[in-house]
Length: 188
Image 1 (tube, helix red, strand yellow):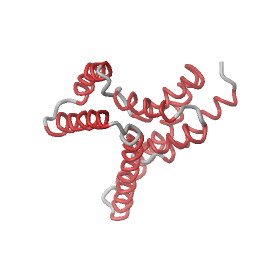
Image 2 (cartoon, one colour; image 1 turned 90 degrees about the vertical axis):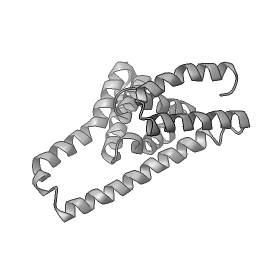
Image 3 (cartoon, rainbow, N blue to C red; image 1 turned 45 degrees about the horizontal axis):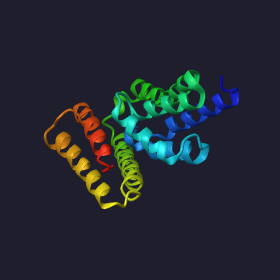
Image 4 (spheres, rainbow, N blue to C red; image 1 turned 60 degrees about the vertical axis):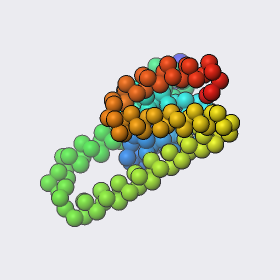
């Protein structure tokens, strides 16, 4: 079993991620990267990119999936439970408080102004996550065949989900045999 110090560090780091992770979803990825890859050193940059792919393609919130994965890697089942609990505690507390105290003020100009500012911040965080992932996936692979293949997959996902409205789960499933085939062909 992991030491109490490691379990406490897992709890504190993921509690911090939960506290500052406004926007959740993809917006939380730069925060996870800084805390877990850069500061704690629990996973490498490449493993982080794999985590992003796994957490984004499995059911549930990205932060919860990431916390569960990293917690398990660092401290087994207990670590997974602690990291997951820590990352959901702040949003659970905030949402419960907002619903309880502020539901009657939701149409207030001040509340709407705060929400609009938060939305802009979330867009910035999502853009940063996109930039970081793009830089690591695309710019690291400077072979033209790999870049072309990754670009075609990106366009495929945008068209199938964004235009044709095919369920993301089905698109992700379709990428499994595509990825295997492209791997055997040496294109990715």
